[in-house]
Amino acid sequence: MLILTFALGVLSLASAALASPWVTNSGPTTPFEALISAEYKTAWLIDSQNYTALGEVFTDDIIYDSTDLGAYGGRAEGLEAAASALRALGNGARVSHLVTNTLVLDAITPKKWRVLTYITWSRWVDGALDDITKTWRIFYRCDDIWVIQDGVWKLQYSKVLNMGYGAEAPYYGEKN
Ligand SMILES: *[C@@H]1O[C@H](CO)[C@@H](O)[C@H](O)[C@H]1NC(C)=O
Image (cartoon, rainbow, N blue to C red):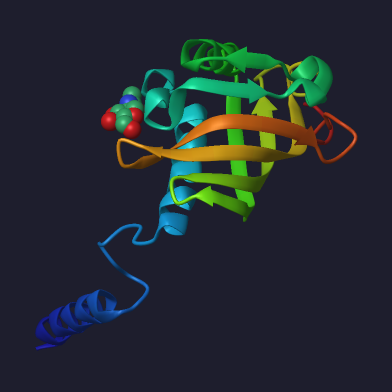
């Protein structure tokens, strides 16, 4: 009886979850939600070092300009150049891109938006956690152009602007 009660409890919890407005299998339903998803997917592809899939979120003619970050940035023209710059940054490191504050500045056309986004970019190299040329955190914003191609949002132009003073050294306390 106890087991049956427990089983029923689990069942009703499961159906409550299905009926909840917060749980849905429909995925992004508006262009804005699809854009946010594309931003998160971009971060996930970069952070999981899945560079060969970047064409799903970058246009072939992407221009990525992070020269404002000085030695920590650069300018890449085209999908291949952008992917290989990201590959070099991920080499031997762990990376994390936290994507927030997505603000649509201008819906230039329904399929071309100018979007401002904040990014917190962390990079760690094991064994070099106190070396700021390898392990760092940078707060920046991107002034981007996203376009809908093949039915999905893709990044076509990104201008990165430093929000703080540059790279910060994360603090890990005393080394053992
Ligand atoms: C890379 O991303 C693609 C699509 O987004 C996915 O299908 C594939 O499994 C990923 N590859 C790896 C190694 O995670």
